[in-house]
Image 1: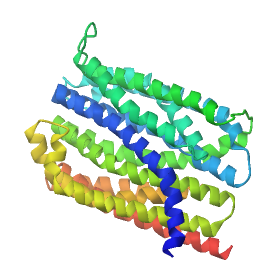
Image 2: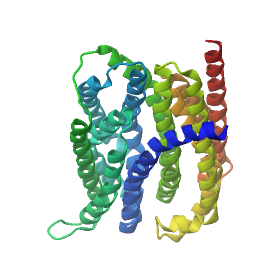
Image 3: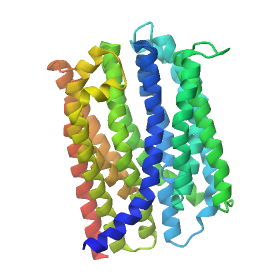
Length: 436
């Protein structure tokens, strides 16, 4: 049995390892923003925390659709189709999607002043919104090209590029936030400008790399767009449901104090760093499951699925132990504010329990994307986050006066329910495969 599964561990790890580096690199770009903002001022950190909380809820709609590219094209590969011809359709779809999302961000700016934030934060948030709206295409172009290459199991260069951009982002952040030479100190807008430049750099470089590694072709197959919407929309809504829930917590806590908004951003950053590993494993599993599903090799499919689940849970359990050992030290990496560290340590302990189930649901979501059955991800997320996490969290946070700790207690309960729903449905799907 060990020899049998070592093959699947090796194949998933071969794809996942570079993706893990890239995912960690991508989130560390965000970590760089948080660290530089925290070093500039608490207002700057609070402003980008609130701004990104809202912007992420808008941009993840497009990201959720674009991440369907790799499992769909993997299914095509397994079925013997020619996936190279879907590059230009993917590009056209990305361009249209970018215009829509950019417009949505710009249209939201007039409402920022009505959300009840501190008067000193509102203009900073508006500036960040305006600049970020024009960076959407660069970010989406990068996502599209990365997913296209991932379908062919080409994962090393795209993720090494992300690692390089960690350092590029930090350098640009320092230059534009604190000023250098003829460039004045910009604070919050400087962070947005740095992100815009990095996103376009990543997108253009990876776009050109696609021509080197794959003989891209054109196609007018409208069935591809239908598949993208069929698989991508439920997946997109699932990601939005989760992101809106997490970022709603930031907004609700921000109405009480900017310190709580900043702390939520820091805590989410901590968990996101470790989450990048099971997310990468989920992406790798989606590719292998997608290929097996297209080829109708259901025995192989199940083995890839179980392997991905096992690796994710084991890693997140180890990660939770590491975080629990030194929460204060970890928080001090993001802020010098002793009050933030003091109120943050209890929240980080709660976070450790959440991480294990969060890793499991990431792997389960990857399996369902590979199966091209993403509706269950959407409904499970809706039930877990909006029928459980938010109501329960509000009760703990405001009625029992637990503040941010209360919301994270609610998130633990919801993550368990989410995993139970998805795992039960996966077992039902596997039983149907056995019958077939």
